[in-house]
Length: 384
Image (tube, rainbow, N blue to C red; front, side, top):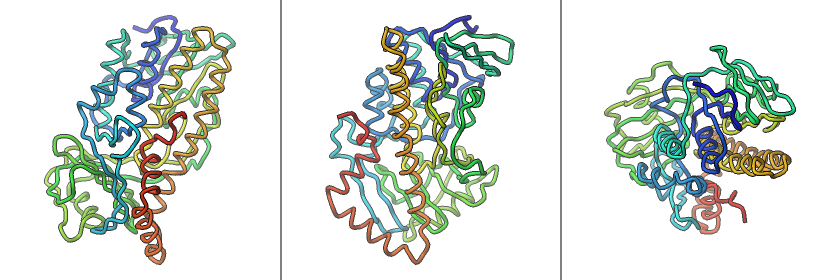
């Protein structure tokens, strides 16, 4: 049952919303989390948690249980069929998490939910937000069942099609077109590729990500011109045949689940409008290239939770403006980085030799490899 009042109402129980809530609960803030779904999804898109994100999650006690469920990948490679164009090792990262942790988003959400529960919180379902009335003292939020909640702050962590963002009247800059089309699946494959690294295959038709997960599962993500509503094993086999290893081709033996989605490159006009704050995909969306989206949202959330707690404890309200101002350039940086990776994959044939030479040059220079490792891991955003 919804409370009549709460300090912070978090709308959306994905990784971003759960992280905000756990951060707040750990600081003793009265926080309420709602989600429109009756049950959490058991399948989800994100599959990597980077080193800096793990450091941030460690601050709220969620890193260790997540690491226990994941598969460390100490290397990232960029390939053109059988040729390794770039190899980025994470083993030299200045972090106690010198790897990319491969783990399904549903597992990440389960760990964060357990942490929130241990701190005395819970997710209330299903509650669909239908109204938002902000004022000088906070906001009143209405739901489809007629209930209302009075909150000092409202956090929109409800994804790309954020109801919070729309009701708050915050614009979402960028193209409103159909966006890039992607297929993804968790599959089992007979493959000669190493199971301790993520591979990004560059192809004229678009990028293909091959990412190992625990239990011998492989996550495939591919940009496609037309994504069928119910892709099967044949479609993913065709993608591997077209873009993956050539000398020793992968063979798909089972599709555990598959889906399609579209992504845009968009950033909200502001991350704060009075008592309303946006984080995660509600604030910024982009290509999945580089596995940055969920990681950026989680880092948004830890910083936002700490800032809200500081304001609750007597800090100036302007701290929230500082949070919004600090997060925006990071979002712009990540959106631009993901876009560059996507464009790198689709260089026309005439430009591919130069692209490949550049990548091999970076791979041969340890300082350049290290800078890229820091960039992928998010550690370039760590405060100095």
